[in-house]
Image 1 (cartoon, helix red, strand yellow):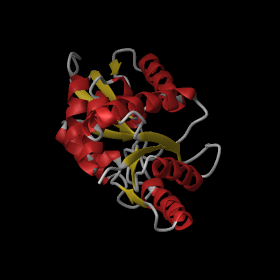
Image 2 (image 1 turned 180 degrees about the vertical axis):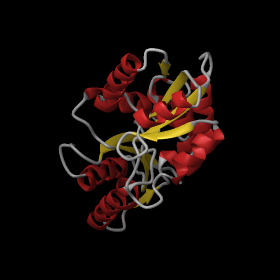
Image 3 (image 1 turned 30 degrees about the vertical axis):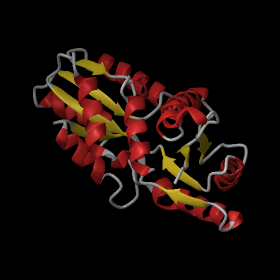
Length: 247
């Protein structure tokens, strides 16, 4: 049965994340219009919504997109959370909003909440390994936002082990500064830093500033910061493959 897809991101006052989501949505829409609808489908099967800082609550955004789907004669909506960590947003907030939307819509259309993007560990590890190519470093740090939710950081530890990197977090310990110091003390002076953030924004800007500051504090170090995941030319293909597996 034909479905529409709603990409749900966190939301930000910075325009860059939404511009990146719009680009991904268009890429996915172009692909699904061919694979799902053939030459007969001209309307987009893909929309986007935000959990926070949106014009309306997420449940209302889902409701509106579901009504659009019904206008196309489609009775299934797949919700794809563009989140990398299984924190409170993924485990509690989004499911609550989806449930509210489904109750308001009744039985005419079905809303399906799919696993979050970060659950695609194998594909994401390949994306990160590609980002590491071309850097002459002795050690890598995988820098994630981090979660205070019980078990929320286990996936990051697993991913870091897979790509042979140390782990640091932006919002919880161990932080990047302490991890850099540990590696320097262990004799690693050329250190690569992989920001495990989906989109460029205020946090990634702050990471750039922190890396520059650490470089000044430790002049014998060489710190190399890679771009966020949205700079990868392969991210769009990953999300398209992920979305198609949910349909």
